[in-house]
Image (tube, rainbow, N blue to C red; front, side):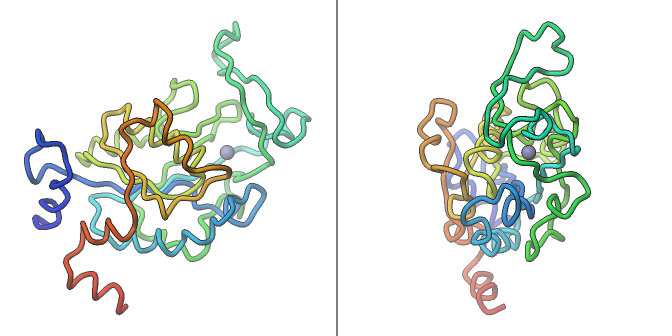
Length: 244
Ligand SMILES: [Zn+2]
């Protein structure tokens, strides 16, 4: 383990002492509805194997997130008798004066809790996950970030788990690159983590590149599955992975 840590810390800021890097892998929303179902992301199926490769690497913790909505969720077009992909201004349930409205895209019904659509996609090595974070579980609250809701009022268990494990660096993969991966990665930076996107293990609904140029995303790093394997495994380990 010490070899792995010292290799990773080569890319860390000079102020960080060797051995202090604690990497976490967060796999975002690899669920049936986002791969094959009502809100399928183009190419979603193609990142299952790359993500399984990442799950073989010696991260300090491996965490999955899932959209896990009640069937009358505020983000569903059906809930408002509107058409899919129309927009509507929504408010936090405690914002009785409707002061902080957020423009919500109204999605097709997706990832309803305890249905097949919300299950992990077949073939994903979900046994590797130490924790699964559920998002959007309250009927009137939407979350894209796995850290907190879109108003920033309520946190999930994720911040506490990462703090408890002493995580310094977070590597993100999964779906969708321009929604939940994006907002979780931006929050990861705001919570003070060195933040990485594993670009060939992410797929987006539209253009996955453009948001990385936005001000919010400045400071987010990019890497690939192959680069991470080189960084985290010895030559012998890599050989063994390819043989198996
Ligand atoms: Zn959702």
